[in-house]
Amino acid sequence: MAAGASEGCSRRAGLSTISSTFALTSTVHNETAVASIEKKTEPRRAPKREASADEIYERIYVAILEHRLSPGSKLGEDRLATIFGVSRARIREVLARLAYEGIVDLFPQRGAFLAKPTAERARNVFEARRLLEPGVVRRLVDAVTAEKLAKLREHQDREMDARRRDDKRSVIRLSGEFHTLLAELAGNAVLAKTVRELTTITCLVILLYDTPTSAACRADEHGAIIDAIGKRDAARAERLMLQHLDHIENSLDLAPGDVDVDLEAVFAP
Image 1 (spheres, rainbow, N blue to C red):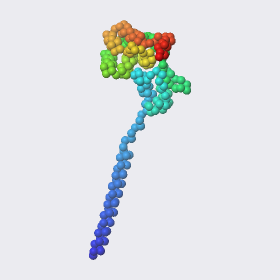
Image 2: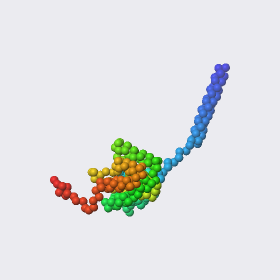
Image 3: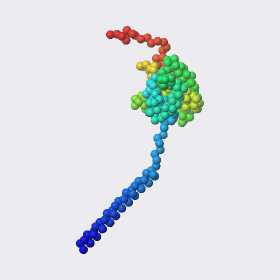
Image 4: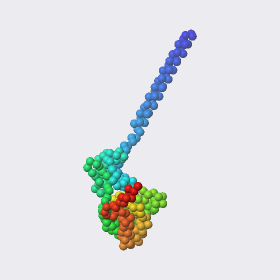
């Protein structure tokens, strides 16, 4: 009887083990199945979108306005393609556009470099701006609305805030963008595009030819132009714009001719 009892216990233990094993296997199978279903139903992550040519162009444009890129800087295709995570073909498209606008110089076998405007070209740029931008403000006086005036005031507030924070990069960028904003609000897309290009080249000119007393756009001059536009005083707005551009150009060292170097002072013991 003891042997029978022992055999019965053994049989029950075996059945219990089989049952436990089956239960464990079933649990693992169920968990695997659930995980598989969850994996299948998990939403796929969309692939990272590549930056467009316009977006890359805008990034380079802002870097120039903020003086983070200097005239003569090499714009290597490989490095830019890696930075923006795009193909070299996309970068070449952007560089070709910048070259067409005179912002980048392309050299065979050497690549692309940020333009280094000559003093003569700098003077030509300011002459072009004096011919264009008084017309921009005159057109804006005729087309100004309360909404447009509010946009100009808001832009000036942002510029003043950047000055208070001594955020030089933002001050430089906002100062340049003020002129483009005037042209955009005037409602002429061709004028706006041209002013934007000339303003960008002006940033390079300032970097090359500034002097210790140089000054970029002054916020008070921008404010006076906005006031004249708000009062629909076209003649005053034009006059202030001309004075403003003259002020910027006259603060730069664009004198023609060779540089007179004091060699004695340079090589003095």
